[in-house]
Image 1: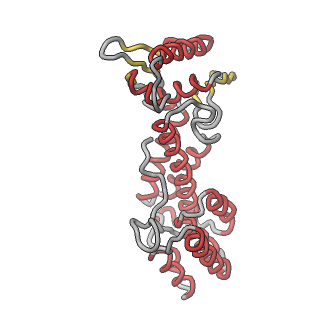
Image 2 (image 1 turned 90 degrees about the vertical axis):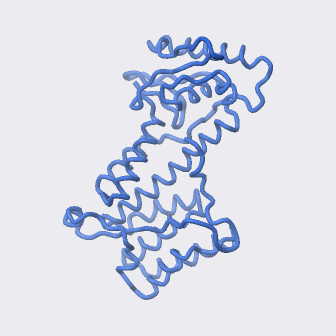
Image 3 (image 1 turned 45 degrees about the vertical axis):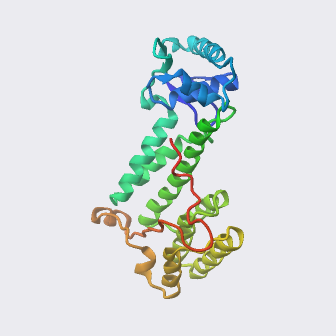
Length: 294
């Protein structure tokens, strides 16, 4: 059994997929599932569905809960949705992490990031690929949601981009180069301000034998960041550019490398560490939404 929030909101049981009808019901289901089995206070749920809850919000919420139970009943899941009496009231939808695609995605991405930091690049590649296999589209599609809940949805979009970047990084570390360029370009088409991906593009070109392509990537990065966004390239990206010009293979690969046991498996490795911390230049240094609550 799987609750799907990534893409179309639906519930899969066996070979059957049941789409959750009505935008408010989908929003309520998402708000409950993102709390990972915890009771959610009525006030919090109202704040998740309405920016300015109307006078009828409590009554409407009870109606939405009843309708959600009605849609869960044919699936044998009605009893999963329980009511908290007293203390202002609340609701809980019981589901283990493996039963919610968004929760699985978040946990797998976090584990993959940790494996990459530990230089376990083979494990990181596997874990991040598993996370991204769960992604069927942005979370919260056709859901009624307040600005507060929308911000949580947007945080998953940011996590998705970051997971894609980290998977590219893991694969660069394991020796892949030119074949990664289409994925890197796709990430940059969605988020042209991400210097991590510009660095990945430069490395993939250079380490794949296309020095001119790496220099061209630098030129495109500076135009995009500067002319379009008013940003100066970071010191890390500038240093990578200098390393390319000097044909310094070791510096281009960077400081991140797989463990010795993985070197023998992949033959050679490439590594990327292009994240930078804070603001310099003509504008804000980081435009990511990674601070948003998941």
